[in-house]
Image 1 (cartoon, rainbow, N blue to C red):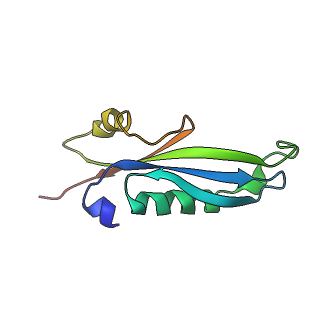
Image 2: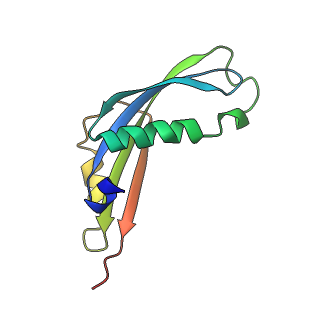
Length: 106
């Protein structure tokens, strides 16, 4: 919430191990622009429903890395996040954008 109130933008890349039975373990933050973003990314990975993956998707545990982009924009600066997320420095081709639109009342 602190990052959202401050309209902070940034990213976090997390690495984790996914087992064939859909269990996630060894979640670690690889890089983060803000500690809140790293914490949110780890929490998202923990909450994903990995066990609903089709059976036999994985034959052995795999190490996965996912980049999360965080951006907040107002109605006045719409599409700002599209341009900003391209400049973030966190590694990862597997990217999830978390873009929030904020409506400011006069």
